[in-house]
Length: 176
Image (cartoon, rainbow, N blue to C red; front, side, top):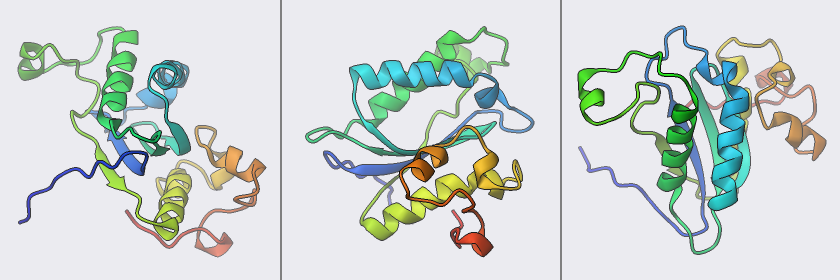
């Protein structure tokens, strides 16, 4: 098995998946969507990045970001988003002894998955994947019905039609 190493390229675009620690029957991210949005705004103000695409699901999120020229520190941004969100919530979750010893909360998985976007095809596939995700998970019958997504911004910009979603409507045949 090859060793995995993160690709960090200044000013590049990346796709991310970030998960809650306890995913089963956990809707924390949509229940606390305003908190998440505010924390993201605060982090962006201090450490700018462009949100190309984003979807927040009950227990995980997917994002497509472009970092500024000369900057490749997406890990800092995710650490600040995750810690800021956690600090804004009351301590009601179970925290394992290992996490307690490390001074950690029990909200997020420690790591996230990232993928460096290599070209326009890769970009479009990941943007489609982000927007189809609520449909894929059975949360809505139509992509446009999920409120916690950049899909609506992309419809307004003419990137997608309002009825896009699913293979029969021009959506992706892309599994991640």
